[in-house]
Image (cartoon, rainbow, N blue to C red; front, side, top):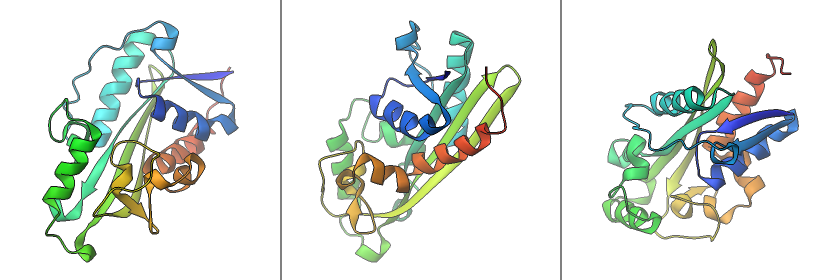
Length: 198
């Protein structure tokens, strides 16, 4: 069994990662499931890639086992790429997803539909051992809706629309086909094929 510790306590992320990597025989567990407390990690990188590495390195140094970490966010063209790396902290550290979405929609209220383009970006860092670091990225283009739709997903999914449907309206399998994290993890899956595992 090939196991990766996922450097997050977000159950949605763990499930997405396992769905995409399981065909290669990989399993995903949280550090907590293996008895480690990752604590708070200062994500002070100015790119998704930098933050993914910070989280992966912290987890690897603590757990001494293969780890995967990701950093992702929403980049809105009309807002100059914001919220970007600050997506999780948009509106404040303790802001709920609904508060963040409300703030986003308020900022875009006067932006015409044709200019509401955006993309989700995801960077994944996988550390296999002291000498092996794999970094990949994925992206998904879409637009920001004027109101929420769908009751699935998490984060900004209810207002991020691809092919006429919000991420929150898609099944998990449908979302994997489109999503930034799905694209990044498929790139990781391809990269991992070059390595042998015990």
